[in-house]
Image 1: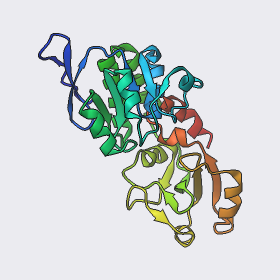
Image 2 (image 1 turned 30 degrees about the vertical axis):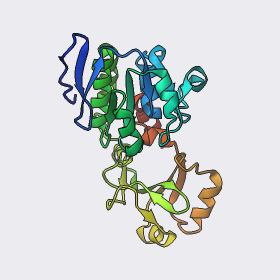
Image 3 (image 1 turned 90 degrees about the vertical axis):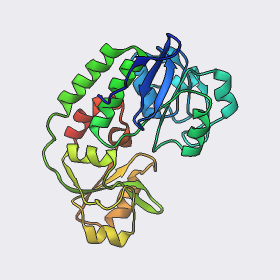
Image 4 (image 1 turned 45 degrees about the vertical axis):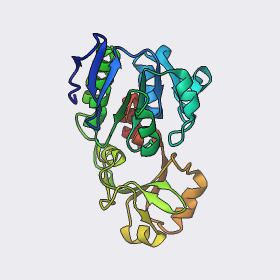
Length: 266
């Protein structure tokens, strides 16, 4: 687990924790009014038994079903309704370096305790889950989840061949090295052909030249459909092209508990 440096400072109920940007934050232990700005981390909070403490979520926090109707919407993952957040009086806001805009997050940091995740690897994800357990007083549930995930991910699955993972259509954008998706592709048995930058743009000619065994069309952030499979088949007639669940490959919270079973059936 990433060290949180939990220690008493100042008033007896203030505790210091380190987030994944190595920032110290001071919060009342444990927080009772949480706002989550990241869908996968919202789902994780609920699966750790913390739904009653969540007061605000984004419009993209679609799991569990119906949660958005039970909580206050504070905007999206990039743009927030500051007046709504302030009215909720959160004692903790949870965000992510990649998914949330720096400017907006820095504005929130000046007013509230903000714990930020920064996820590239499975270890980062497990560290985050463990940190949530410690910070939010649900250590046992978090430890059980981490134990199960360590078991699930102990050995990569059988090799399936080379792959390119598409996240956007126009322009074509793909997941490259130094991403959590790349880590998941490796676990699932795919050799990611894109090892240059994190989310490079490609052309159809690039795809033809790379000639992957598999072309994976993600369900998010661009919602690829069956009709797109036929379009790409015109350029890659020998490639196995399929739609894949983007939440499995890019959500780094408790959704990972479904990853092994899903990837085994790809």
